[in-house]
Structures are given as C-alpha cells and as structure tokens.
Amino acid sequence: MKKVLTISLALGFCLVLALAAGCSQPEAPAPVATPVPTTVETTVATEVPTAVPTTADSLTPGPVQTLPDIWSIEVQVESNGEAINPQITTTRRGGKGMNVVPEIDVRITRSDGVVETESMFQPLHVGRSVTLAGTTKNTDRAEVWAVTPNGDKLKIYDAYVPFRSYN
Image (cartoon, rainbow, N blue to C red):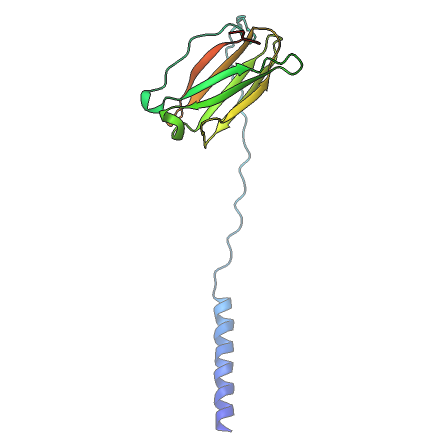
C-alpha cells in the first residue's frame, strides 16, 4: 500500500509541475502592424530620345579573335552541297583547348535573313559537329564563338560558307 501511495504522490507532483510550467510562460507578443507605404511623387527630367539606326544581322563577315595558345581549338565549317536539303555543318577538329573550352556557339545567318544558333557543350571530342539549315546561295554566313574557361566569349570564325566547292 505504501508503494501505491508513493507512486500516486509522485505522479500528482509531476502533474502539478507540468501545469505550473505551462502557466509560467510569457504571453506571445502581439503581432506588429505592417507600416503602410507612402508614395512620394517625383519629377524626372526626360530626354528626348534620339533615333539610333538598328541594323538587321549583317551578312558581311567581320573580324575574328584568337584564343590563347593553351586554349586554342580548331573548327571546320562546310556546306553539304545538296540542293534539296542544304545544310551547314560545323565540326570540332581538335586543338589544345579541347578539354578546357566549356562551350562552342555556332550561328548561321542565311542569305534569306533567317538566323539559326546551336551550341556544343563539354565533352568536346574531335569530330563532334552541329548541323544547321543553309541555302543554295554562296552568301550564308557562319560565325563560331568559343567560351573560354574564364567565361569570355571570343569569335573564332566568321566567313561565308560556299554552297558548293568545285576544287
């Protein structure tokens, strides 16, 4: 009987402690009201816009840049010469930067004004290629950019791609 009374008193004491602990916590603070934003009218002086001539993608090849020797890569750009389905293929041909250049971007500006782009990402093995639609004219322009390990984008190829070569 003594054990039962001791256990009952211990449980009762624990119950009183649990109730007292729940009542002794501070009340939750009232939520802080969100301040209402105020608007301030300002007068901004505007300049009269000047007309800047916008040019469409040029069909004239421009200058190219050279990658540092340790990052150099070689690409080959050629047309398939098929009149039914003319295509321009850009192929990775090697170079010291094969494992360090993370991306090669190819852009074809066709003689009819359509521009198509495609990218090659790592791994850039020899023979990896990108094929885009071309035309049967000799004025399709191919541009190839290499992204350096530093994140710079350099144009490494910019030239017309002849539809057929008879050499």
